[in-house]
Image 1 (tube, helix red, strand yellow):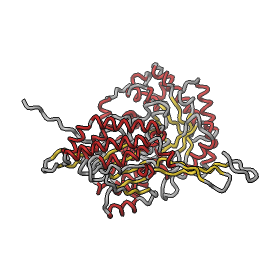
Image 2: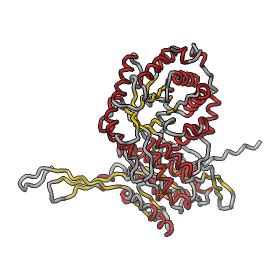
Image 3: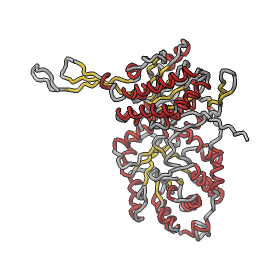
Image 4: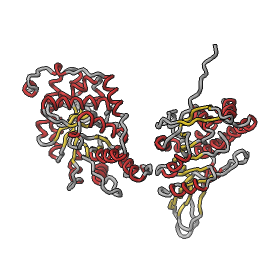
Length: 306
Length: 293
């Protein structure tokens, strides 16, 4: 199975590309220093809103919480006309059905985490069941986690086969593969895990579960974006990117947009190919949009509760 | 060989840290003889925004501290200031204030902190009440801190004005963003150093140095600021505050006191930044008997 897809690559270690950590840091610093003019900023903020996967993945989630979030996904700030909706909501498989019903008639998709999220410590059969449950309940997208333990012990074939198996079950649903970069230790590993995930059929690669610190960082995201670029050149297949966790303010989100544009270009500048996994980013972006248009700094008191 | 002089860099005080202004601007502070004594950060509206974020973040924790603990912390500020008495006096003199005036000012500032430290665990008892109502309810009013307050410091004294306004506000459980007087920024930043070493949680007091003309509008219009304390007499500026603070019904407080007066302190300065909450608690009242609770 491995040999076929990788067209001749029989050993994942040969895929290993060393990453220049200092170079990455310097490059990322550049993205943080771009001057963004008001007009572009406003457009950028609206695009960011439209790229958000509004997320709740807590043990304490209740049906009411999920319903409230689905309502928010469609009505971000109704007093302000002309705002887009978010791209999707992201919930546990248990809540997919409810989310799907709550979002009926809107363009907002339902993404579900699966495969024994967040640890991924379960046998494949259970992960497949978990995925099927989400899909049968109507999930449009599946966010799976890779087996980090297996990856770190060098069992790359296992990781690859697992992703491929989940992808097969997914069918039409788009598959996002969470690498949980906070546990992968080095940027070299992040690059290798990205490549394995893409060769195994990932539609998106995603940084983190949000349960581990550090979650998404610009450095890690940059390494993954360059992996996506190289993959595109090599195979002609476009893969999406989703940084998740820790991106909670507009300024940082805009810096991600700069990085995305300068690394992958305009083809990726839509929610079909780029997402933010976040719970509190939406409100901060809304506050910035209202600030841009009224000149008045805003308060969380006048926006919906996360 | 002559020693290389070591000059202090006066930076802003935001969220318990001393950042430079994000704008990278500064202004030159001159003494009476027209000599440059320091380059001072010229804070921008973005620095103010960052300071409000820090103040809001600190607000919950500070307002929930036990009042006695707030009292201890205010007293600690007084202690730390006392140990730096000489430095404060010297700095005031460098900014053009006479030695005798400077000494009085520093002593009064310390005393004022001690005064408000004493009020911390007493003002709620004095300002709260049980109210008579003609229905079977136990009706009582208590005071709660308003939240984030922006303070425009007076320009008469370098240090005393700042301390006299900020002490009662934080004693009452609020957090503040202060714009120091343009011509006396040095004492304000040295006061920040005192705060930083006095167990005052980061973000409770944030101090900016810069131009009132640039920042006043934003200090009055920011939706996440609950009240604005303005020490000054300009009619134009007051008008601007009134117009800009309407949008979120911000409380605007005009303070025009001679802080050098020993009596220029009191409960009213705490009360000014408190919100009254009244609770109607149903009680049993059968057959016309007098209510009991």
